[in-house]
Image 1 (tube, each protein chain N blue to C red):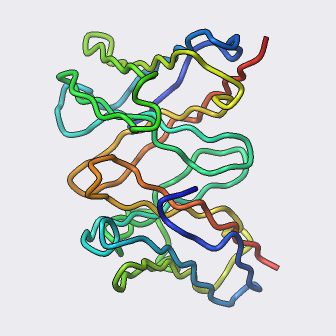
Image 2 (cartoon, rainbow over the protein chains, first blue to last red; image 1 turned 120 degrees about the vertical axis):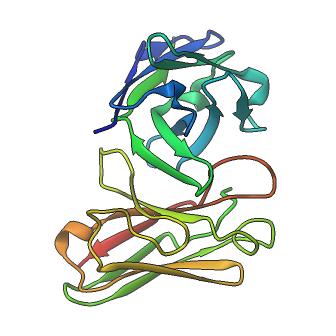
Length: 120
Length: 111
């Protein structure tokens, strides 16, 4: 059973960098079968894809966030990470890490999500 | 503003059927058979319930069905049950090159 678990600070100050890590169990990031993604959801709102990374380090980012996003992967720890710089209150959201199967365009499974609040 | 358009809400009584639409363009739903649907209960992570327009992952009840016509995809829930009350999101591959073009979500209320 594949499981993903987000971790990182729940509170980030404005203008600083949000950093999250996703630990994958039950599947190997290095298998090369999937992309590994971050999706966020502001309270009461819809889903916004942030970006996806392949085990080799290749990345795809949402154009609206691209200038502030860096994703990385650590295959030795079976983890991937998100850094979002220059955050504002608009970046306050639940952040999900998700496995993405590009060939058929589906996201599954999802981590439980972690709330990140941007506030001074 | 979401790239895919869904109604904000739909409702139905137990046992009835409802359909949720998801309208895109000729750059996404219109040209790709890679539409997926997700169910999200309050406070929970979304769950994949439909992929490749109409395929159900194992474990998803056959009360959930889906289809596509032109630029619009549709999700039908038959024999509504209280547990179906949730928000449903559609997603489509897009020629824009980005992954995960989502709809704005539709809240299903079981009356």
